[in-house]
Image (cartoon, rainbow, N blue to C red; front, side):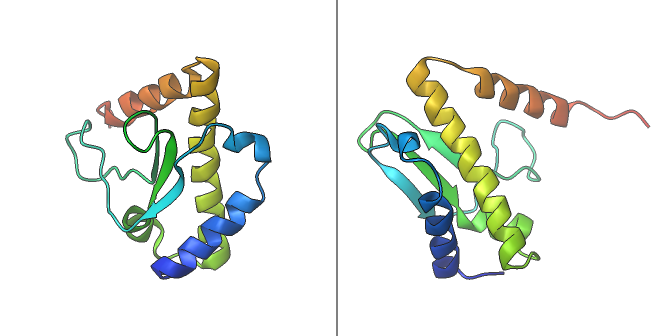
Length: 124
C-alpha cells in the first residue's frame, strides 16, 4: 500500500485538477484522515466508508477521505489505480457538496438505495 504521505500527495494532485467552482463554500477543504471507517448503519463489518462530505459544525463544509479504509479495501493496488479510486471518491464527495449548495439530495438518495440493495439478502 502507498503510505499516508504519498496518498496525501496523490489527493492534492487530483484536487488540483478539479474546477475551482467546486470549492465554492468548501471552507474546511479536503482532509485526509488515517482512520478506517465502517458503515455503522449496515450492521456489518464489510462495508467501508472511503470518504464523507460534512456540512455544519465548527469546521463548516469539508470533505474527509479515510486513508485507513483505502488501505483495507484498495491496499493491493498500484499507485495509478489507487489514484483513480481516490479521484472517484473525491468527485463523489464533491457531488454531495454541489448538491448541498443547490438544495438537492439526488446522490444521497442514490447512496441510500445502494446501501439498501447491498444489504438485501441474495437468493441462491
